[in-house]
Amino acid sequence: MSSQDFKDWESASQIDPLILRLLQKKNDKSALIRKEPPVKQRRLSVLYAAFIGVSAMILVMIVGVVRCTDVDMILANSCRTLMVFCVIGFITGMIAEMCVRESAKSMIREMLQRTDNTQNAQLNETSHENRDMNNTR
View 1 (tube, helix red, strand yellow):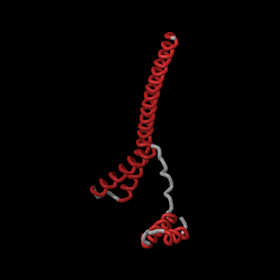
View 2 (cartoon, rainbow, N blue to C red; view 1 turned 90 degrees about the vertical axis):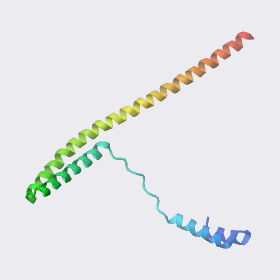
View 3 (spheres, helix red, strand yellow; view 1 turned 45 degrees about the vertical axis):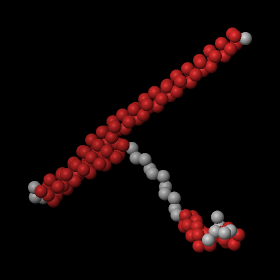
Protein backbone atom coordinates (compact mmCIF):
# COMPACT_ATOMS: atom_id res chain seq x y z
CA MET A 1 0.00 0.00 0.00
CA SER A 2 1.22 3.46 -0.77
CA SER A 3 1.06 6.43 1.54
CA GLN A 4 -1.75 7.84 -0.62
CA ASP A 5 -3.83 4.73 0.10
CA PHE A 6 -3.37 5.28 3.80
CA LYS A 7 -4.42 8.93 3.49
CA ASP A 8 -7.53 7.86 1.57
CA TRP A 9 -8.34 5.30 4.25
CA GLU A 10 -7.78 7.85 6.95
CA SER A 11 -10.32 10.23 5.48
CA ALA A 12 -12.85 7.59 4.41
CA SER A 13 -12.88 5.26 7.40
CA GLN A 14 -13.74 5.28 11.02
CA ILE A 15 -10.35 3.82 11.96
CA ASP A 16 -8.27 5.89 14.31
CA PRO A 17 -5.74 7.93 12.26
CA LEU A 18 -2.99 7.03 14.73
CA ILE A 19 -3.45 3.34 13.97
CA LEU A 20 -3.34 4.05 10.24
CA ARG A 21 -0.09 5.99 10.61
CA LEU A 22 1.42 3.12 12.59
CA LEU A 23 0.38 0.69 9.85
CA GLN A 24 1.93 2.99 7.26
CA LYS A 25 5.22 3.14 9.16
CA LYS A 26 5.28 -0.62 9.54
CA ASN A 27 4.59 -1.05 5.82
CA ASP A 28 7.35 1.40 4.88
CA LYS A 29 9.86 -0.36 7.17
CA SER A 30 9.03 -3.80 5.82
CA ALA A 31 9.77 -2.57 2.30
CA LEU A 32 13.24 -1.50 3.42
CA ILE A 33 14.15 -4.77 5.13
CA ARG A 34 16.51 -6.89 3.06
CA LYS A 35 15.63 -10.50 2.63
CA GLU A 36 18.25 -12.95 3.83
CA PRO A 37 19.90 -15.05 1.15
CA PRO A 38 19.16 -18.76 1.31
CA VAL A 39 21.39 -20.80 3.58
CA LYS A 40 24.21 -22.43 1.68
CA GLN A 41 24.42 -26.13 2.36
CA ARG A 42 27.86 -27.53 3.00
CA ARG A 43 28.92 -31.09 2.55
CA LEU A 44 29.32 -33.18 5.67
CA SER A 45 32.85 -34.08 4.69
CA VAL A 46 33.95 -30.43 4.76
CA LEU A 47 32.20 -29.81 8.07
CA TYR A 48 33.75 -32.90 9.67
CA ALA A 49 37.19 -31.98 8.33
CA ALA A 50 36.99 -28.46 9.68
CA PHE A 51 35.61 -29.44 13.07
CA ILE A 52 37.90 -32.39 13.75
CA GLY A 53 41.00 -30.67 12.35
CA VAL A 54 40.55 -27.44 14.28
CA SER A 55 39.62 -29.30 17.48
CA ALA A 56 42.79 -31.39 17.25
CA MET A 57 44.89 -28.31 16.53
CA ILE A 58 43.52 -26.46 19.56
CA LEU A 59 44.07 -29.52 21.76
CA VAL A 60 47.71 -29.79 20.63
CA MET A 61 48.23 -26.09 21.32
CA ILE A 62 46.77 -26.42 24.82
CA VAL A 63 48.95 -29.45 25.59
CA GLY A 64 52.01 -27.60 24.30
CA VAL A 65 51.29 -24.57 26.46
CA VAL A 66 50.66 -26.73 29.55
CA ARG A 67 53.96 -28.60 29.01
CA CYS A 68 55.80 -25.28 28.43
CA THR A 69 57.00 -26.40 24.99
CA ASP A 70 58.77 -24.00 22.65
CA VAL A 71 56.39 -21.85 20.55
CA ASP A 72 57.92 -22.99 17.24
CA MET A 73 57.46 -26.61 18.24
CA ILE A 74 53.84 -25.98 19.31
CA LEU A 75 53.00 -24.34 15.98
CA ALA A 76 54.74 -27.04 13.94
CA ASN A 77 52.98 -29.83 15.83
CA SER A 78 49.60 -28.10 15.70
CA CYS A 79 49.88 -27.49 11.93
CA ARG A 80 50.80 -31.12 11.30
CA THR A 81 47.96 -32.24 13.53
CA LEU A 82 45.55 -29.91 11.74
CA MET A 83 46.41 -31.37 8.34
CA VAL A 84 46.30 -35.00 9.46
CA PHE A 85 43.02 -34.64 11.31
CA CYS A 86 41.45 -32.63 8.48
CA VAL A 87 42.11 -35.58 6.18
CA ILE A 88 40.70 -37.98 8.78
CA GLY A 89 37.67 -35.70 9.26
CA PHE A 90 37.14 -35.41 5.51
CA ILE A 91 37.14 -39.19 5.07
CA THR A 92 34.83 -39.62 8.07
CA GLY A 93 32.50 -36.95 6.68
CA MET A 94 32.40 -38.65 3.28
CA ILE A 95 31.44 -41.94 4.91
CA ALA A 96 28.79 -40.22 7.04
CA GLU A 97 27.39 -38.43 4.01
CA MET A 98 27.14 -41.67 2.04
CA CYS A 99 25.35 -43.33 4.96
CA VAL A 100 22.88 -40.47 5.33
CA ARG A 101 22.14 -40.37 1.60
CA GLU A 102 21.71 -44.13 1.38
CA SER A 103 19.40 -44.09 4.39
CA ALA A 104 17.33 -41.28 2.86
CA LYS A 105 17.14 -43.10 -0.48
CA SER A 106 16.00 -46.32 1.18
CA MET A 107 13.34 -44.47 3.17
CA ILE A 108 12.07 -42.79 0.00
CA ARG A 109 12.04 -46.14 -1.82
CA GLU A 110 10.03 -47.70 1.01
CA MET A 111 7.54 -44.84 1.00
CA LEU A 112 7.14 -45.03 -2.77
CA GLN A 113 6.73 -48.78 -2.59
CA ARG A 114 4.04 -48.43 0.09
CA THR A 115 2.16 -45.81 -1.90
CA ASP A 116 2.44 -47.93 -5.06
CA ASN A 117 1.14 -50.96 -3.18
CA THR A 118 -1.72 -48.90 -1.74
CA GLN A 119 -2.60 -47.49 -5.14
CA ASN A 120 -2.45 -50.94 -6.73
CA ALA A 121 -4.68 -52.35 -4.01
CA GLN A 122 -7.18 -49.53 -4.52
CA LEU A 123 -7.13 -50.07 -8.29
CA ASN A 124 -7.68 -53.81 -7.80
CA GLU A 125 -10.61 -53.14 -5.48
CA THR A 126 -12.23 -50.75 -7.92
CA SER A 127 -11.67 -53.11 -10.84
CA HIS A 128 -13.20 -55.98 -8.84
CA GLU A 129 -16.15 -53.76 -7.94
CA ASN A 130 -16.58 -52.79 -11.59
CA ARG A 131 -16.50 -56.46 -12.66
CA ASP A 132 -19.04 -57.36 -9.98
CA MET A 133 -21.32 -54.55 -11.12
CA ASN A 134 -20.99 -55.66 -14.76
CA ASN A 135 -21.66 -59.29 -13.87
CA THR A 136 -24.81 -58.41 -11.94
CA ARG A 137 -26.25 -56.50 -14.89
